[in-house]
Image (cartoon, rainbow, N blue to C red; front, side, top):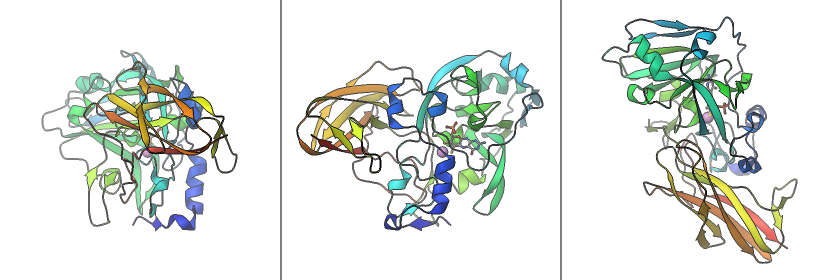
Length: 354
Ligand SMILES: Nc1nc2c(c(=O)[nH]1)N[C@H]1C(S)=C(S)[C@@H](COP(=O)(O)O)O[C@H]1N2
Ligand SMILES: [Mo]
């Protein structure tokens, strides 16, 4: 059962405990093309497992011609690729829902862009020889815990054709350094374009399976459902979203913003897991105008945008919304689903101009 809370009742102790373990990226971190590792958002369902790099082995098996076992040195000796990837947690924005599903109470900060270095998964799958009849590739992490009364290893799967994409990597470096413990040391999966739950950390096993994987993190979680009875569509790729760096200076307690009248530069980032960014608009109260898009940093990374705002004294509501190349646009009204997933409501920033 997903517990739902009236926002008027405030944040619960359980949510606070999750929020203090799982940090968000302060939005001013969007000033960096590549998020410093210590600023990248973090989501750990249970505990960070103890990993010993010299004892670590990756087992590749299931419906394959020849099972493969790799040490860290063997993995690192394989062809390497480095790509910038924007990752977002599927629960980003959950804390604004009414009623609110009790889970990690993200506002907007469950994002980050790192340069990930690793070896393409398809090379390893080809070495093992995925047999006909394979439907899904299942990834197992070393962490174990209980969710919804079910004790489980952290497991997520990808359809075979998604797993074979060239940009799906088994990574051992983030921003040019060995992964930190909380980000999946020694090796994690990175699936560009998909919400973060797919990028399994502390990877230990990869299995080819002949039936659609029905683990807890697929059937009970990461679904877009309206109630407990409905299974709902699975959560897959990241929906289009833009965020701005809140301008001016904040109030410590309320985070409300204060700027001086005149020209105020506004900048931010926009990203989408299914296509490119076609447009970013900035809203001042109810007037919307186009921002200028910066050059893309890569197919899987966020894109910078900026504009100037002629700020007039008084209270203003700033918003931004992106549109992707397929015409999908962020909503201005809050949609709702039971687990608070794949939310991409346009950001709202309240500013006082002095
Ligand atoms: N093994 C394992 N992998 C995991 C998780 C986890 O709890 N255990 N959390 C997932 C979720 S929900 C997200 S959003 C991303 C977060 O990656 P990060 O903490 O490196 O930002 O990791 C994913 N991979
Ligand atoms: Mo997540």
